[in-house]
Image 1: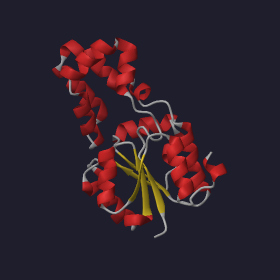
Image 2: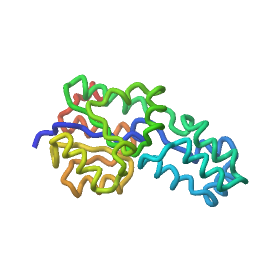
Image 3: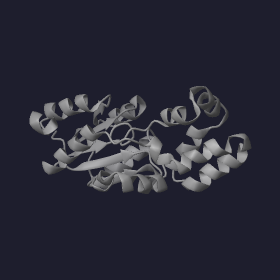
Length: 206
């Protein structure tokens, strides 16, 4: 079956997402480890990805941990520093696919507010042919529902879709639906896969 759309995760595929690296640079690794052990920042972020309001979620969590108020509020106030930099080669590959007339979708765990914030710095995020953003969909990967929602909305399924993501559990969920997949470990490998699938030439993928 011919590939009819390429589906991109965003975090660590098109934009680096490294909260630990950010906190290490600001408060040091030891204190960051203590923060992450005592405060469920990842759990809070997951609820934002499910559609919870970003600012309120961060401030409510900070109120529960007065000893960490300053550090927790950084998750909101300096969030863009965690979601950076752009992975230039991956963004170029996305543009090359679109230039070749290949529909490009996003399928991403991202909050409503954080997506809008990031798109101000990363214009490519407004250039997908179809957006599938968990905050709007109220469900996150790897829940099978989010994959079905993409299929139902696009009318595409199975091997007509090629999906790349940096997380193996998200890849496994797509494979269960018969999608073609690529476990993203860097743009070079993704570029080779797009060439192998006949979607880009080597020069277009360089």
